[in-house]
Length: 305
Image (cartoon, rainbow, N blue to C red; front, side):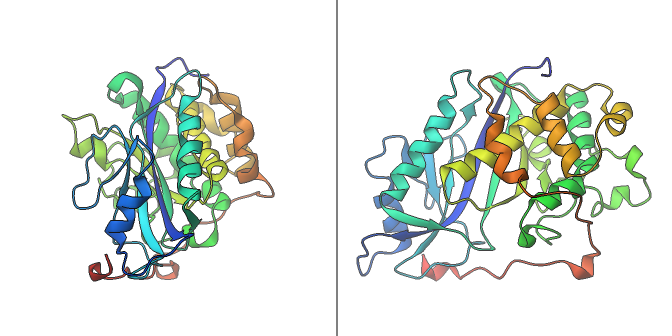
């Protein structure tokens, strides 16, 4: 386990919410207000997204498809900042949120839905340059192993660009000489570093992993969150990762699995959450040429809100 402060993180759950009991004439914003009722630490963020909220927020995301004017409804559920505490209270929060929502709705996803994890050092500290270099090297090294874990529609996607292959700054570098410290701060990349450049004087200095598929239950949510936490923890404190990584771990699924289990770690870690993600997966999925990429379907217009 790396000798570094604990992480804190936030998650964004994009999904389609189909009420168990449908009422005619209920628009999406109205249903969002109803959905949060009965859960004290949840609020509707329609019309005014609050990045500093201490509550879970239900917000509108115009990139999501699959809703009708009067239901089902496409939302994004955004967590508050969650500390990586030693008692695992953050896990209980996630389970409670899903239980609350599922009591009122069926949760489904489609190809426009994703799951995002924002990560930053504990206690509001900024990422150090050394940590960013180590994390970015691991991202690039395991780029094609991560693709092998994802469903087809999250691979080689024009909205989830490779942090190496699709970055013009790296076109003439080989794999051993890659780094992300000068990467364009474009949130179209699988790993978004733009928050660090764009919010230097705020607490929103996060690395965002945008590549993950939509989740419909707490087990899926906790599994991908576990992988994100373990991956960043495994990389962040490895000072000589650029020299030593290739000698210890292969750049495929087996190597990635071993990497996060050997070198990750945090209070109350539960590696078994990742088992389903790695189950039956192997090898790599190559990053393909831009002309062969998949794209999201277009979003519905705003008048369906």
